[in-house]
Amino acid sequence: MRGGGRSRNADRPDPRLDMLTKKLARENVVADQKHTSFLRSDSLWALIFSMALVALLPLGAAAQTPSSSAPAAAPVTLFGSGVQTPLRFAGESTADNQVSLSMGASFFYDDNVLSNNADRLSDEAIAFTSHLGVARQTENLTFSFDYTPYFPIYMHLDQFDRLNHLAALNMAYRLSSHFSVGVFDTISYQNGFNASISEQPITSGPGLPTALNQTISPYTIRTLANSSGLNLTYGMSKRMSLTFTGEYNERKFGSQGEGNQPLYNSNGGSGGVEFQYRVTEHTNIGILILHQDTTYQGGNIFGSRVRAQTESALVSVGSRLAPTVTLTVYGGPQYVHLLGLGASEAGISQQWQPTGGASITKEVRKTALDLSFQRAVSDGGGLYTSVINTSGTFGVRRRLAGKWEASLHGGGGEADASLFQLANGKTEALLGGIDFSRPVRGGGLLHISYDTTHQVSKGTLPISSDYDRNQVSIGFDFRVKALPWGQ
Image (cartoon, rainbow, N blue to C red; front, side, top):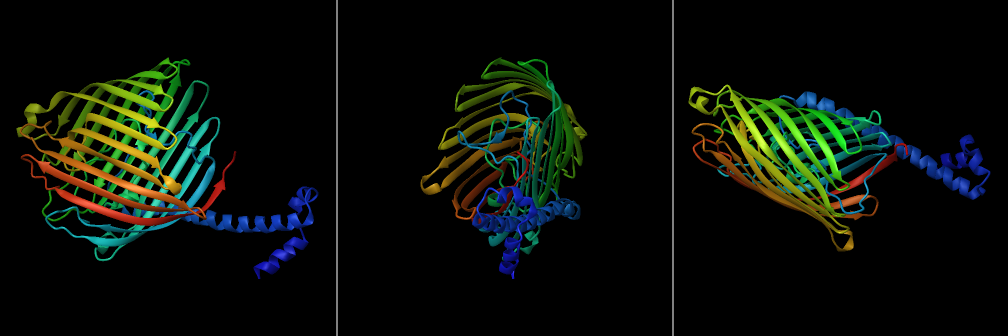
């Protein structure tokens, strides 16, 4: 049937190809018409399926909003040249001006699905994933959108058999020669925690002080998190710029295990202004004034409702030390004001805290690595309200023989609740993982991953978040289609 249809088309060439047929031999025209027919049919189905995936985002979020939490905030320029971007090899290009769609399936084993050492349950699962990516780059516009829904099916613990969502939007537009505006939004809805599926790409540069806590993992079945923001930059000259930023963060938690303390949901906003000055071609300095206001509610360790206001004044230096090496260092004071505390905590409702961090990134042809450190007052990941967070992370990408690539990441962190009177509780975490991937014929990608987490709480506070967890995954992703979008 299809072959007959194509023969009739070959006998009657498409009028839109008249100019081309004058320059080509008849046999080449026939081949070209067959190829064009295939592309149109395949592209139509890819477009229909892409639209269906996009439709799942608001429908799934609306149906599952009662629960909550998650992943990392989108990048916004706060520390000179130290913007968090995906860690890349030297000369590695990005996929601009296209719409891509891929599908995949993974099998994984988890030795502690509930993140509870006292009630340790292991299980196997298969997860079906898809990814919709949209990228656009012009003289004035940079736009990217990534959406990854995935659906796991566990062999025994079917309460985690739900649709999960990860989506990120980033856009920057140059309004004129002096003004540019940026918008970002990152949302995540997860049931349980599947590290090998839901991990974000390894990034470079220091983390943001407004980002949600990514080191501490709470005991919960469902989590929802959203980070969105807007920034406006005024370029006063070729060397000087002024950037105004605003951001909103929200995190909610669903079901928790029996006997655990209720977790703190959080929502709040931040606003800041940063002055940047390019000292040399390779070095920037910046001064950032930042205000954060966050409300925590739902827990009971520090009261059912606590409001934290933090004022920060940070100085940063970002420099490209060599063609492949970038260094960013920043620091300054933070003033923390806690509201809504009980009588026992009233004596220490405000205090000064030092904050700072550094990041070094090296990107060469076969190896890319990033080392980062940060100390700042931020949210406690649901276990606490505001805490003193100290963390160090690393990420390495390495090209191996035979088209294989390895990605190694890890780090450690501590959430210290000593902002509160008589509260010497803290939670410490170590995490890491390695991933091996290799492209295969037909646009596919084979990947094998291992992730591990170790977390323990200490002190007088009744936090029961101690656990060890390991996950092993093997999967295959296949690119269905990549459609060009403009030039």
